[in-house]
Image 1 (spheres, one colour):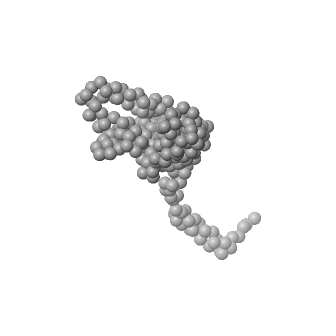
Image 2 (spheres, rainbow, N blue to C red):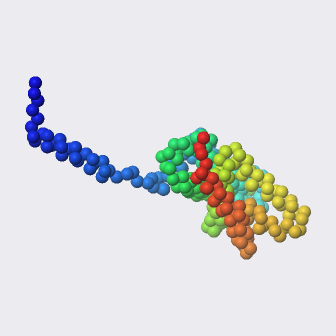
Image 3 (cartoon, rainbow, N blue to C red):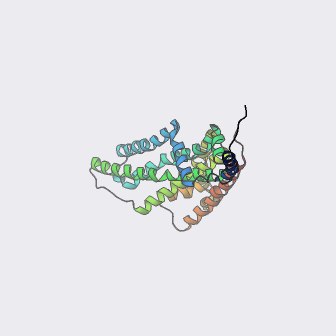
Length: 279
């Protein structure tokens, strides 16, 4: 049997064949993922896990428990708004850096980096998104500290039958948030440097609690170190900023220690993340 193909059909097939490559060549490659979307993803990843949700809940729980402890055991003459907010800030200096540590180290400990860095090959943008997401957590944490502290101040004053002392200003809110942010970034840098959750958390505990105690003892026992300590002990200046007690040379001490103990290690950490292999 002979099959006859009309010339019009043949011409149509030829035109379609010629047009197909044109359609393929004009297809646009997918655009770069916006940084805002990466930040939203990192925020969701930080608190979608069981540990992340517990850490988030522990912020509020620690604030309430600390407030109750102050009302129950503090001398009535010392009840003031600043006492509540600064006391609430102490557990936050532990919880917030741990959140930052886990946001980085989870890519290696849970091997989620295999998917993350495949979907977004530009690791620098992923690291930046993680840092921004971690810093954003400071804002609600600060709001919780001052809101719960205000309630505690009212309840404590009424319970002790003393005047309510409001000794915190908007500047103090800014100092509190800045101090918490610096400590959170220390945890972030340690997580990026060590890339192990347990190792980075232990490293932060050494930085935040063990080293300052040893340096304080050295400054107390050695006069020559007492003057040098503010230039060497980063936690000393960060705690002063958290309390809103930086003045004069204190700002110079904060700048120097931040450059040495935070900025330089952060550059090294980012370079290591860009080059390290997720196994």
